[in-house]
Image (cartoon, rainbow, N blue to C red):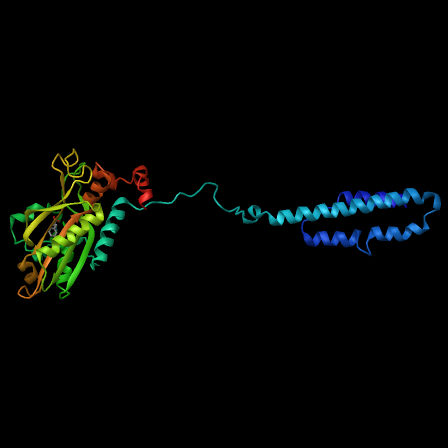
Length: 341
Ligand code: PHE
């Protein structure tokens, strides 16, 4: 009998259970009504009287140890169940945090420009970067051999003189006008190309957003008001604008718009070269010739147009000194805009 008890004690000490099911099986095997330990108690009656004391103590010890062991196994299993960290552990995940990419500063600023003008009722229009001479120049009132064509150094394809890379997104204005009757209220964001030597201040490609509004009673005042609102949304409520007379073949009258330098608040600093003003865009009333060239009756309709460089606006907002930074894909530079994403 004592041997049996010792053997069971040994077994009980070494019990293992991986889950609640296994544990229940052990409970049944050892301590349930029909288990090994109650069976021993039944045998106790046949133990000779002089051994009863010792055997009784040993059986009690075995009973206590078995209960303790099963309770401690239960506690272990329950705490593993509650340990959600272990549960949620994804052993297939890469060891290092994956750093996300960031939107390019030009995209951020372009989206902001689009957002401001869409709130004013402008819809998006896009067109091809590889264009024909007509949409870039002809339809925009640049007569053949007009010196104004030299204002924008153009990339030509030698074998196909009519095929060019667009030098401005005004070509999209023309594409929309030739297929749509007014009212037209669009903004055209896109990449443009000019044959310029690459430096800190010039690049052979850059980005523009142009706007066009054509309807029956459109005035220069409407243009000025929309541009003032844009400038304040983009650069802050204190921003002032001023319009200076200028020349573009496709607008008459034409103007260039300056905003009060938002770095010095208009007092004059090195950024605005002491003037207190920085130029941000070109604009004007659509030349009646342009309307006619694109199939719109200039005796009924009038319009205004404006165009800005996205790089220029980005420079003003973020003081990027060297234009080349925008196309070098240096991650250190791009990551600087992480908070603007
Ligand atoms: N297309 C002009 C440029 O690229 C900008 C502009 C657009 C000016 C519309 C006036 C009106 O320089």
